Image (cartoon, rainbow, N blue to C red; front, top):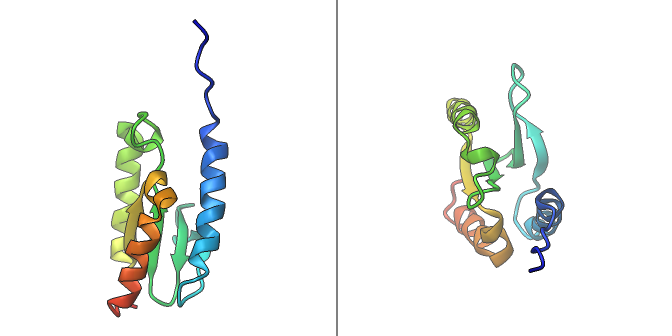
Length: 117
């Protein structure tokens, strides 16, 4: 039996991030990619809208026990997200699948339409 061909998740995620970046240009505010929000830690936000204080995180590995699902990384993410909350940063989290299906963009558009920004 022939083994299944495995794709490179990092390469796939890079493609998803790039396509998502293009789709975000339709929104009413410009974003910053890989924004460092903490002067103390090297934490980055995948996509950040500075005027409205909206952070978008794409959480990979939900189904494959990826980095975000390991106990130490899960705890580190909680620390990062709590620090974001203390900085009054709104957070929306999505899987790569939600990005590919367009669900993430729809939810972000809804957020902008609510007048939160």
